[in-house]
Image (cartoon, rainbow, N blue to C red; front, side, top):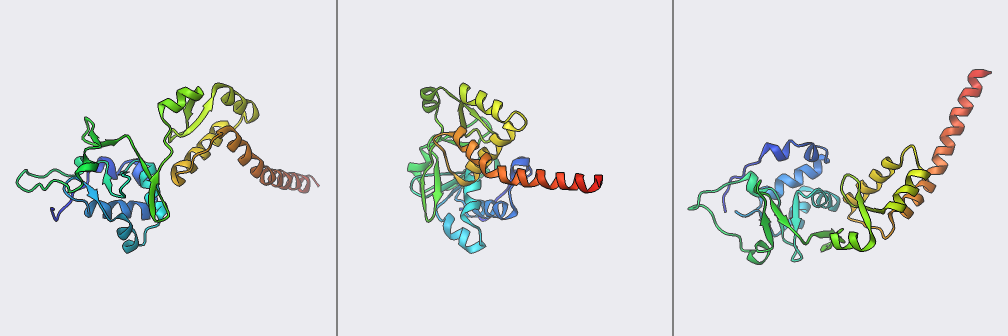
Length: 219
């Protein structure tokens, strides 16, 4: 395994990368430094403990597809081949050939993986993916920046009618939460409605405050 690693600025200076917390960015760099010549890392938990990173940092890297996770607990850096190239006489194939065979390589040299895994506590467990089969079965469409909020045409229209001024903002709030936490919901419309009820008292207090301010100024 090589002692030096490189980083592609197209990845590390992208908005998607720089929008993440510094602790998450730091974890990404350390995982890269510990990758084998194919970008596989077999001890992400130990690296996290060593640098003081949290499970949320790892989950965010997975949610944003900066790393790919296997059932075995091994991870691979998605953009490894964009970061690093080695001469054949210095290259040592990964020991994780079973996992390597599950990967595809895109035209831009990034890895692809059909089966994703999501960290939960001390384990890496199956993430509930939004598959084309599920979408077709329930006649729903994908919404949100992270493409993880499922709504049927009827549910989307109800959402627009109930929250005409900020329905898109509410979709994005759920999308971001699901991406960062790895959580999924059976009914996203019901989830958005539930969140709206929790927000209602705050909005009422805010309205009362502005009303009192207006009355004070008037008097």
